[in-house]
Image 1 (tube, helix red, strand yellow):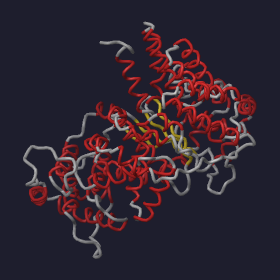
Image 2 (cartoon, one colour):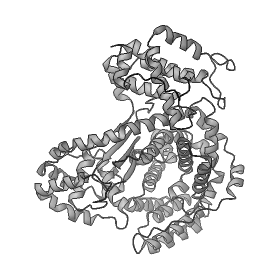
Image 3 (cartoon, helix red, strand yellow):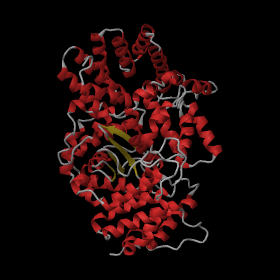
Image 4 (cartoon, one colour):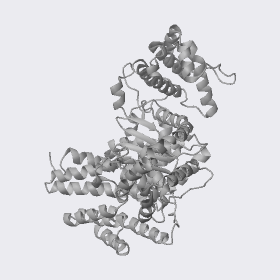
Amino acid sequence: MTARGFFHSLFGPAVTRPAHCPPPSPPAQLAAAICAGGVAKRGGAPAIADRLKSLCENSFLLSFRGATGDEESRCALENIQSEIPRFARNDTRKEVFTQILKPRPSVAPGQPPRVGQKSGLGLSAARLATAVLALLLAAPPAHAQQQEGKVVLEPSEQVFCVMAALNAGGYDTGLGLAAADDARQVVRSYLDQAAAPAAKRLPGFFSEHRVEGDPGADLGQYISLALLLGAPPDFKPTVPQADLPPDAKAVSGLVPILKTLYEQAKLHDLWTSMQPRYRDAQARYSQLVRQAILMTDTYFRFPVGGYLGRTYRIDLDLLGAPGTAQARIYGMDYYLVITALPQPEIDEIRHQYLHFLLDPLAAQYADDINAKNRIRGIAFKAPALDSSFKADYPLLVTECLIRAAELRLDKLPPAEAEKKLTELTASGLILIRYFYESLLDFEKQDASMKVYYKPMIDKIDPLAEERRLAKVTFTPPVIRVKTPVAPAKSEEELKLDDADNLFFQGKYSDAKLAYQAVLEKDPKSDRGLFGLAIVASNMRKPDLAEEYFHKTLDTARDLRLVTWSHIYLGRLDDLRGKRDDALAQYRAAALTAAAYPMALRAVQAGEAQQFGSKK
């Protein structure tokens, strides 16, 4: 197959550059040369078609840097497509590479680009282009590809079966909404006609385990379980029962019912019959998701597929309430279960992908981040800010960076961006404005975020940020009236915030009294129990601390509290010389630690070396 024919099969016929578009820029010519060069070298071998297409799409996006809108981006793409046939000729391709890939005189040969260097298609962009070309010319062996991390967009049979069981058992949230697919009705009718005896046990089970007043948490416990189940028909959990997250463990009794239902109702046949609907959903989402991921990778200048063995799995669901999105991080893998819509919305998909990219950097540089935590106390004054961000400063820093990146990627008009920055700062994201400004500088240089990240953190000036934040009026807490007792719960949360503030100020005795006051009204308050545990730990009362950490694990649904309880119990075991018990606790924490940078560092340190050891 010729280069022209191969690109016709991948991208459609060559286009003529529209008259209203400017001539191809050097980056557009470079992208076309890269792709045409790859095809000429490989001869359009079908075995590398998908890989080549992905890499070429990414090289297309090199030309989008600095584009100010959809029209400019479209022109860039059309320019590249119009150039591809010309670059199928080796002599033309050689000429372009000679002219474009010249080192910038201001950079000494062999020296890396400096962070803060002005952008252009200079040496570092050329290196990136050459790296893409090298990948095009040398696809890795199949076994190496299997070991790579990846982003997966597809439905899961385990999630489908759990959601089908939910619908058979009375899960009616969002049923009948105009935006919903009729897949739910099809599944319900099928299960009604199947009349499986196991289905009769489902309404009672779901009623017994319902989370009152919180539909998201009610559904979420079953999503957590589904993501940790092995393939049918066994549905064997992929982690030990004792290590299941609390919400999944609470409903793990569904598994034997599900196994029986799978056989009696022939759920695999139902799953097979639903595949055309799921393929339609994939078709609606795949291009938008690919585009969002490539644009994000290109913005941060991350290499294609550089996930270091990690996976981001997007599970498309048709049986939940429209607009539902449930995000999870288990081990080093990221998950998002999202109910597909006729008109796809990908904000949640991109947000979780940004965590997938940036969380490892926060864990790697957690010490550098904590060296800038002088302003952390200001976040405690933000009533609307979630307690997990107040407890884990690198987690807060990461969320600020992600939300700033979203504003930059969306290319909002200045007035709208300023309004968003004001609102998000008032919500407690105290460094979002700093990162928004830092990303403006990032866009003007050529280093990737992996190189730029640490200098960006090091440049945080806590005193300057304190002066800036002194003018901020924080948003009051949102009272969510879901049930008659919701206001009381909100009052409890405010008291727990006060107790946390006392603890972080080192006022352990006062914090202890504050946590005890909460527990007098709500003996199962997971934050109250965890608070007493860490107070006891800091007051050197290990036996009491251990008691309250175990009580926290018995009641908590908050994965941050569960993760840290396992870590603290592991440290206590280490201090007592019970290394095997300590390692078991660290392994239990590892399942959910990746969502919390400081916790992940603590788990890695605990597994590598006994806590308290001077070695």
